[in-house]
Amino acid sequence: MEEATPAVQERIRSSFGRQGLMAHLGARLGHIGPGRVHIQLPARPEVTQQHGYFHAGATSSIADSAGGYAAFTLFPEGSSVLTVEFKINLLAPAEGEQIEAIGKVLKSGRTLTVCQLEVFAVQATQRTLVAVGQQTIICIHNRADH
Amino acid sequence: MEEATPAVQERIRSSFGRQGLMAHLGARLGHIGPGRVHIQLPARPEVTQQHGYFHAGATSSIADSAGGYAAFTLFPEGSSVLTVEFKINLLAPAEGEQIEAIGKVLKSGRTLTVCQLEVFAVQATQRTLVAVGQQTIICIHNRADH
Amino acid sequence: MEEATPAVQERIRSSFGRQGLMAHLGARLGHIGPGRVHIQLPARPEVTQQHGYFHAGATSSIADSAGGYAAFTLFPEGSSVLTVEFKINLLAPAEGEQIEAIGKVLKSGRTLTVCQLEVFAVQATQRTLVAVGQQTIICIHNRADH
Amino acid sequence: MEEATPAVQERIRSSFGRQGLMAHLGARLGHIGPGRVHIQLPARPEVTQQHGYFHAGATSSIADSAGGYAAFTLFPEGSSVLTVEFKINLLAPAEGEQIEAIGKVLKSGRTLTVCQLEVFAVQATQRTLVAVGQQTIICIHNRADH
Image (tube, rainbow over the protein chains, first blue to last red):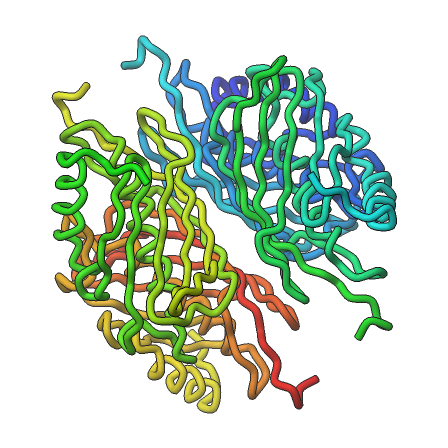
């Protein structure tokens, strides 16, 4: 998979590092490509729902960040990224060693970007699609950019 | 607001207590009424996004749990609750002392329940609607119930 | 219910009149208030699904237009309205003499507006909520407006 | 692309033929494969919004039917199909000679099926993705099937 430029990767890592929630959940940035970002979340009791599976909120949190950062890789320097909305379908109980969210840009516009979200549960060599989503992201251009 | 029966309240509290994610985020159960549940999440660095606001994932996590438990208050004894899907619009940056999610049942069926989700940011006496959502929940009936 | 100003009502009626789909379905504009628009669709074989109920597409079509026009009532003169996305839950089979969609603005911004969508089936004096939705609308400002 | 069995194709065509809305819009069934159905809608003034593009309601109507029938191809004999909910993002103005909706099953379960929806605008040999969606479908089993 294609890698984003070092400058873009640095911008994503720096922003991710400021997301208190990602560190608190134990989430890690994976691949950063142009219009595509992966985030992994290892299994631990702190991210479960009542039956011991990954909580839909944990699944949604890394999916939302993966999509937002996928969009952010394509934004101009100095802009900010905000989630307008997302929708997620939980296809199967999320269990395994970790889950991985993949955010991909489907349509990139000056103001709005639409992303596809996928979350896989990973157990040894097996990957199971456990959630799919769609997300709308807005680019907040800085003043000088206008 | 009407309170759920003690048995239903106990069922919700017991399940909530088993959600590792809610404790890890610092979320607390508030009101438990028939078809309506509130969950509060105090501000702390562990639940933020890159600008210091509540992360959309934290907002979504308590909204998802509030809706799921609102549905669960109306389910028969011995059944389980799973989120099928939800959609959430983030209306404004979520900042304040805490956020509060309110899940309300809009339509209750034997298999599927549809909930409305609202999240307010609370700062002193001011409440601001920061997110709205819609959620589909499925009731997993236990064997003896069939 | 409060009525929109005559100028705004005229703007909505004029745009609605140019929507070929609304006339073709047989839909009619009802109430036009600030941030709120109603659209009715009488039952007829041309708007059914395979069991004779209103087709989800017909329900969605008038819900989408009701929300879009609700947003449009609050837009500045000379701007245009486009649907970014919507989500709709179909709560019950839509049957009756007509269905009525109510679009209401939940949050109005310079660029994006979020609307709540409700559709009721009407049979004599009985109104049944058959669908609920959430919609994101974008305001396309004309050049002179910048 | 793989074709569905003649019996399944006949089941889909028969149901589609009973959808008054599809005929009224001028929509036509295209490919019918296992878990995948295409529906085309030629451009005509009767399916437009106020700027002359395909109305989001028309786009949504054929997307909803395409997804519902994609699910229906995998359902047991004698069952019925109902849309629980769908969400659609409109990526670009839908203009061209026709639009084509493609419904694909992402996850098939005994009760619930989740579909991906895509709509393309077709102009001569050019295909543009104009809408993407996600849909939840419920299978209503007949009595004897229990």
